[in-house]
Image (cartoon, rainbow, N blue to C red; front, side, top):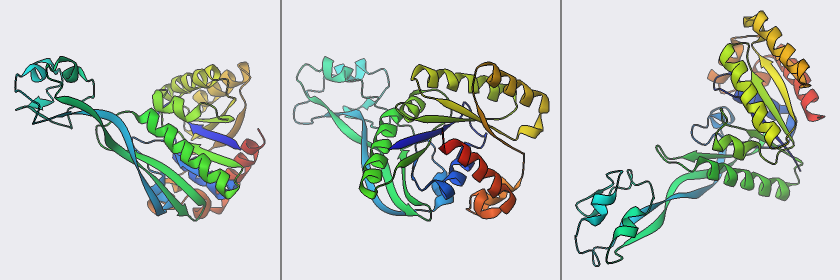
Length: 281
């Protein structure tokens, strides 16, 4: 089973648009691993078959029967998550200090539901995505579970490819998205922040010994910066598998809940050419 992650060092460079387009050609299980702010489902409009609770961080729970109301827990909590000898779940960070200082063992740490994994059918096939509740953490752990769910579906359905929409940046959820993949496609654009962040993602891929290729989106908005990206990639042996011009039709397609392949024939041909380059890597 091959796994390809589409990543970017910063948001807004067109990563999700590319994943949505590649889904038209890939015959793959698609996984949206941007669990803090997934948006691929807005284009795919999946019919949800399964909603799986995700237990992330722990939360403290005070036993009213055991509690002697000494106030030690409230005094020790740096997050002000305990008031009137009750835990405010939204503030609790699961650090368990309150449990350590309680003299009568009246506090237990229990798992809480921090988000969900959704599995559904789309016009492109099976689709999996995760969504954390607002303010929750452990996004890397949820990404791992989303990928496991996608792998199980791929094995069950006999699919040979998983296409991963990775979150932007280089943090824990990105590491969980691109680790143990076969290829990372880094989407960038000809701006200074995008070039800087492209290099950061490349360093992460290199650390995990995952091959990386580059797609330059909106390459014609700054030709000088575009040439700098090409020069950097050529100097470092990184293949550029595609260049996409700026076109408002990408936004129009999303507004109409479609990918660009469904919306514009000329751009569909370009996206297929890029995908054909990617799939043979």
